[in-house]
Image: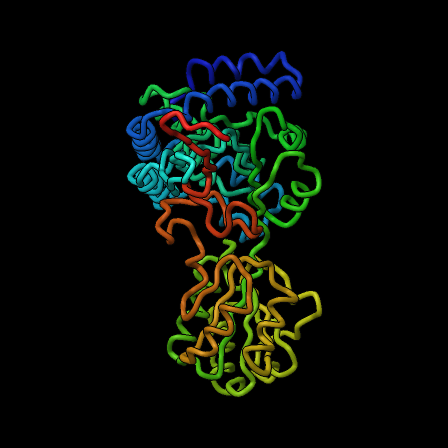
Length: 436
């Protein structure tokens, strides 16, 4: 059974683009997104929830068709020589498709973020002022490999009353199309504009360049991918950007770490899924426990098939590989981890400040003072204590899904869910107040 075919404007658009230049095509997509955003700004919460629930039902019903589309992408990925980690990001199976549908339903069930009164106050001049949450408008999402982002980004943008233009990676082209068709089916079922969620229907990289310059139509760009993609977007975008940088995730094992907790957390943080941005990439071990707990941790990782690139102090553990200078501050996204010994929590902090990406970092310890010091002196978007860094995910934070982990400091930071995809406006009322 094939995925539900986009009808109406979406189908006509595919036919129309055959006779358009790419610039005209992207301008048309932007124009229609802006028109859809104007309607979504006041769309009822129930209609948005209905669209997401119907989309989830469509995805569940089309699981086999989505897997078939994904098989084409996996073949393409093999031809391109994608790494095992990238292939894992790309792969969809029935379990992952169920998770996508569950994520849509979770977002649908959340409170609507639009119209929330963020603050209210009265002024001596007679004004009553409310600050109220509003949609951002049109969001452009540029992402690589992971086809589930099509659903996550589409759902969160819609929930927050935004239209979205999705430009997926060339590797996930067919999977993203199949998922997008289900999202459009949900919009149609709820009577919402089908242009609210648009997928750029080309692998042409010039489409990315065009999106970065669409200041008339796009309010913010969200890049989700590797350092190369994010760097390109930050350098060339004329549209504001929510940066999602690489996840150079550190775990510091303090002298006061509980050995059982440390061994469980480190192994999970590295090996559960190596291709996600919350996977641990560097292990820092307090010198006082390097020969005991530290050696056990290294042996655990080696036994699990992880290549441990160790500094001189840890190379006594058989099976390690000497670390090179460029192994520090590197996102492996693979069964590889860098490991080194540090003198104390301050040395760990200094290392993370030098080599980290302000994404997610963790301390394993039973020393409350060390936790406080670690939390106060590091400025990563997510800081964790005695917890696997694999939890660095909007779904695990109760957001249903995420559009990315923002590592910048303006507007949104950390997991970006529906609430973070809103702005605000001021509503001012009085009983005829005038200014003297």
